[in-house]
Image 1 (tube, rainbow, N blue to C red):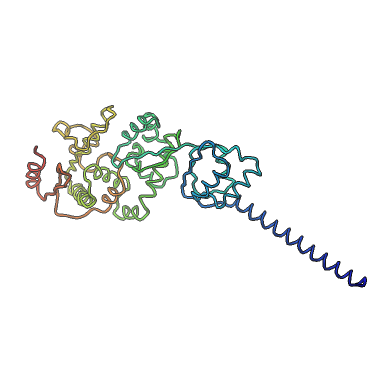
Image 2 (cartoon, helix red, strand yellow):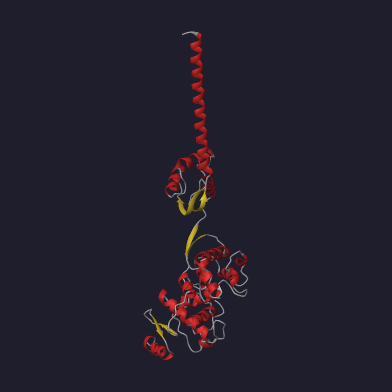
Length: 356
């Protein structure tokens, strides 16, 4: 082999080595880019819970997070916490990961420690007072803190919630504390819980429903007030629409609503009894004479404001009343709603279904 051939082979060998080096660098850079992307790129998460038990190592935690769909790669997670020296510092606890979260964000949460949460369920038809009593009983909040957050002048009303201007300044948030099941952080303030309920109300009471209210030349406050009566008076969705039609008809004709739920609300507000007033509260003649703007026996039209916090079924019934020939109704002991066209029919129905 002459000198020129040797030189050519050396050059080829050098080029091959350079190519391998370049490819190696390129692959390394690609790996780094993928790693960085996986660390900093958020992954969409929809309120996923993960409970990290004491004694779990970084690999076990990574497997759990991958299984729950919180991270894309468990090895990226393990490598990252090892590189930053945090593998042994991840704290046990109950975590809820919401919205888009990157591996870096998740690791930060795990290093801070789990913010314990709890589930609360607010039934449809509860009043703000009953919710406050429930919170105090469950050691979530004091009744005083809750009443301050939900009463007139509540700081929450200063927030940019587009349906709140409908509420009179002298009124509280009764009717707008949407009944549902919520997960709240332990230690949440009354204002934070109220804000969560109002946000839920805004989602459930859709723009289409609000537009219908506007077209009827009513206010959302009037609809919520009517819905609060319907919520306490009738159970079935079909009957609710009929009762809604009856009550709006009474208002239009100038008849008093004479809704027992308003009397129960008045009596409930007048007592410090921590037990909820029964929805089957029997109204006496004396009760109907109580001088209160909520008394629909004494004053015509809607009461001063909502008498409960209605669910979406009652709100929709108040918005979409069903026409009928009826002007009276009563709730029988078996849960049925009995409708009557005349007062004579109604009195007969009372004698038949309400006499024990």
